[in-house]
Image 1 (cartoon, one colour):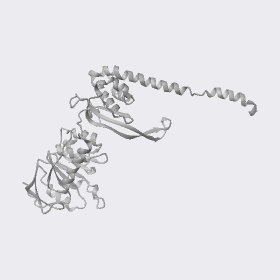
Image 2: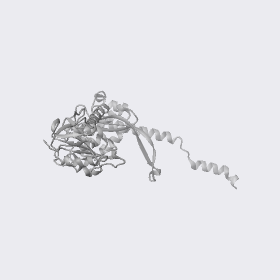
Image 3: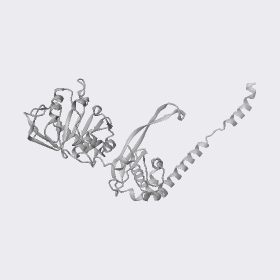
Image 4: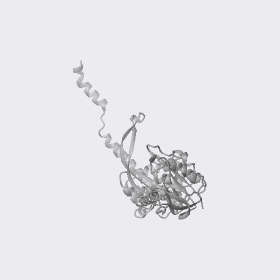
Length: 205
Length: 165
């Protein structure tokens, strides 16, 4: 890391253990209840770019053993040195090498099938995508979700996501047990979309 | 690389950080009295860990792991500083968190041209003298155990002459 990067770095969690545990809890809840919107506990200083909830999620999940790919808007921003400093993660330029992918609002989403999908023997070695969206409304007509963690079905309305996401998601779901897991974020909330979840009704509101 | 607008060399920071890493706490306390009890803006609170030290035989041979040392590091901004003010960083041997904090405070202040000269006089100069004195004392202590092998050889040679013949 260069000295001028360090100059503009913001602090991390105000309390490292409690802050990251709260974030991890929210991430766990979001993946256990796909399609339900959870407020992200944000107890950290933030970089100037990237949504707060996504930034806190990355800060909580990354460590020195993980490789991170950032979409172009984030890779140029102060979010990259901030995560590098606080988590020690390795930032890669090829999305298909990354364990975590963070896509900023407005940046193109790399094709899901081009990311690390894990193998049939080791499906856990797949990538986790954090995708920023404009708005997320749980229980509002849009997508109809089914799968483990959902009693019957659940509705989720997403705005600001690439139109072909649902099509890509069908392929992702079909390649189970391989596939990526996704977190959709707004500035304050996070919704989990594990690979086991099906999107039935693909009409976007 | 680290650059400032004055005429200091780009390696200046490297040099003073190396000095601060060796600074004993009493010297830091004396020079940074008004900062010893203030809480800085932490980027990374003092944390203690292990680092593997590597060496080379004779300074040129293959690298080998010499052993692990306990290191405490931290990064901070001064408590009054703006959010883009210089960041002070320190790595010190041992597990003294307060010493690491003061070394980082000194690093942050030394990057500020307005405070550099004052701190250079009140901290870095005494620190250099202290380290030189320490080095000289250690050198002198080692010197007392020095054996002049020439003398030994001559005496031994004188005594052993008969045996060898």
